[in-house]
Length: 455
Image (cartoon, rainbow, N blue to C red; front, side, top):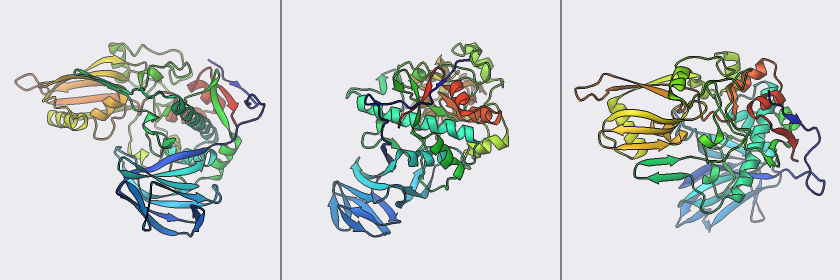
């Protein structure tokens, strides 16, 4: 098994000093014509005190209208980032997912409104550690085991700092899609956000401020791991995670851009991490997906699942192996609506290329009116579901052919929940339940990385 080299000494700058905890800009509520909010303590606007109370902003002639005055942007400054708070009304959570809903949410720190896309976006300015306290409580239950929470604190902190650094280095001609008349290859990452560091939904990391009460354990875990990040070589790791890998982890470059991260490669989610079938081969993937192999994430342990999954995540019962059935009418209408392309009747869904976890990264859709190749995995998931298909690791069975030989029923049998890269949250929860500490969990999911103190 690969080993993590745990450094008890912090990583220092060339001057010998630790870095300073950064402030994070989080996009909370995006592209709205009108936003209602409540200041729960006294804030400052352009140096003048603004009392607690209910307020609103709206878009007006490409500017923000607030109490009769127009602004290009407007910032409500907190005297104390760790105690001053505000509430945003009707925040959308689970955007485009099956459990999408609105709720009022409370946040610590500063509040900024900007104009983008001819609408208003609300941005929370918050300290990184306060942000993490919320993320750990939002991404999973705050009652999760201590070692799981520690592992998640380290990877969430690492991922965020890596993204901030990456966004500084992205070239203007950076592309996330390649489109030809016969093929659409597109991936979705955090480069979408140019006016803030991260968004508050599953597109980045789920963040709900202080809406959900944290626990003393979460606060203790954040304090115990304060400033700790995963590193590989000289860089902070782009530490990805998903709900359930399905038994084997996917490689980074099969989901996002063609960059190899040696700590984000194929591994089996079990104690023998290096032994697993070659799921890039169609026959092997078919056999694997139709069975239920041993894996940390192959569990129905209600105690463990309750730790990892919030109430709305538990609305989904199947994740390690799942099945979805569409009629011809449902599937053709769904693909047309989601992709914007009219394929006519769907004749076949043909996997052309699979990744190391069995996830399809290039799929040929054959229709009576159009044939097209789509990828990568999230583009496939978005095209085959009203929200997001659980994963792109699936096989297709057809039935009930009509007189023209066109199937009238399509059954997708699949594995895993999410992209499958990096830490598998359900697998990590089972590792913690089996007695592994957070360094061993990180060792399993991010081989050859090191834990170092950044600030």
